[in-house]
Length: 333
Image (cartoon, rainbow, N blue to C red; front, side):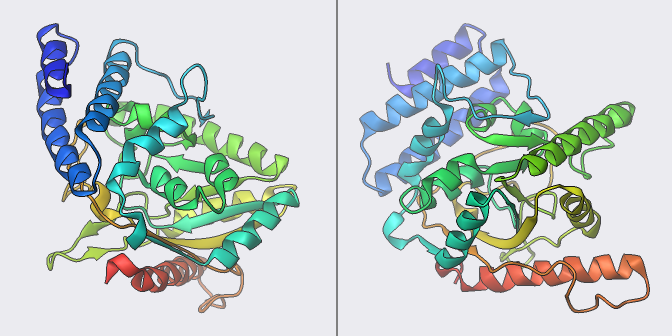
């Protein structure tokens, strides 16, 4: 049974709602075109998409509950390597690149000393964690697999995203742009975020942790000219991570991370509150840029008399580091 027939059968049996059937049909077609362009076989397509559909149906029938800190699930099913195998056929590796390998080596040495690394990066596409792992699996596989991602609620509740989220280490939060929707859940969401931040403090106290966070709180999107822009960083978000890091018993080092992954699975043009967003896969090159350690106390405008202005200046400074690195990535030219 091919992937289209299996999807139609699941729909006929009421295992998957009609709106998701349409989303998956369109995604299947884009995925099929993309991996054919990249030289992968139809047999590979059917196997991976049928497996993905089984995981989606399983999530619809019995939704997985994510704790504030979710550890990647490797048994009895290896979700980590499934996620890599799912997106690998889309990546043109010979045109993809990683810059700043010397900074990655420094981070790895930091982790080996039992100290922590927090990556302050932009965020472009739903499978950014898989994109990072795919480009690091030959040089820094352990760091890539053990990396912890600060993740918004959408990737832990959307049935199409959950099979991929299960394979990652996640600190699960509600982002600022979604925390007041619906209003009656605001307090519950705030309490959840507090539990997540407490768990993050415990992880940093243990040491040897690498955590990725997107201080923008969401994915980059195209501007009116059709150019992908790195979303500005939220100074309050940065301040929270800086405060938690300073309180930890183990030292924490901050580094910028630039990702050029947008074409892999572009986000919708606007931020949506509903789940089940459209997904259109592409065959593309991707790139990463790891920057040198950031001095979180010495930056332009750190002497501003107003505390809020100092925080804004730091956010703008770090954002500019990421933007500068992003402009150097080969597939962003």
